[in-house]
Image (tube, rainbow, N blue to C red; front, side, top):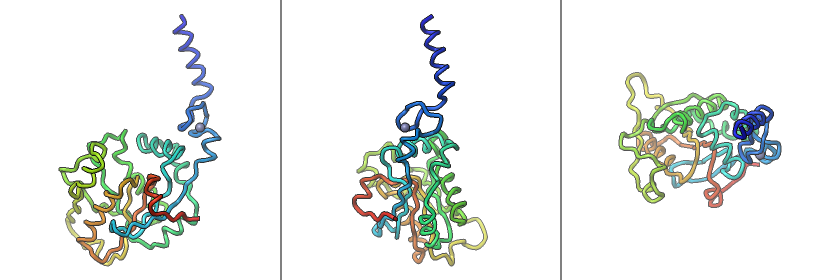
Length: 233
Ligand SMILES: [Zn+2]
């Protein structure tokens, strides 16, 4: 009987407060409670990593506190309700990226072994949002080499010493879309070690030495920011 009552009470609670705040878990009718919402802000950054083959890296969120909770949730569920929270960027940041005048958005391919729940289509989804925001076409240039190991299963040292996991997708017919292109943007969801973008940049540079490359990611880990940062204000 007690169990029944407890179940009933928890159902009742759920009815009146159907959601919990994604970050602090307090009951909330919104994805984030008002307190967490007040600290969740895009913190656009412009990071310079010339040694990685990338001229500039633009990242919209720093992975700390509330933003980590939100980005993780989006990462694993692709919840549509979060998109309005995530993509409410300052106009001047959009303008700054747009002023780079790049010709294509090139998404980093993701392992098909990852289930939809782990967000296998996440970068494709992100590229689509960027396409709508910047009005620049998407070019699927890469495929994964069949021997690619998932980064998550590797420690940092093995991760850094992996062979390049990317192959350029062979073109079946027609002119090469990159022939007269001056600049492209690589798209990834999170910037951690810089290794992924660097591998992708290496492949582009080997085939097209005159193309300049920028990177745009949704989130960046804070330890990277300390090394080289330039907040856009
Ligand atoms: Zn909260």
